[in-house]
Length: 106
Image (cartoon, rainbow, N blue to C red; front, side):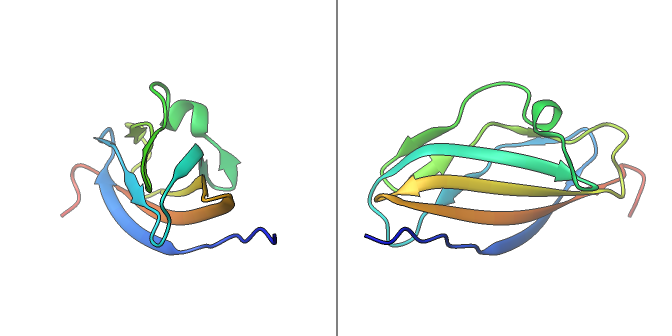
């Protein structure tokens, strides 16, 4: 059986210092397992500071990932978040761009 990697991109914004939990529905799948996420800023891996605590969970074809915490001085930066799960035996990935918005910006 050939393993496939699926990549779909999304974009969202959060305020610097803000926190948000993301869930991914793996369309067409029935069982998600072994979920993981990586967070990058300026090509550097910042996962340990951007997702400092908690754990990733799965239920059916939905993965809920650790809470993303935007740095308090990261306004005007872009985080690249890569979500990954094994869905029905296939590794699937989704990439999301998260624009970090300064609190004082309109």
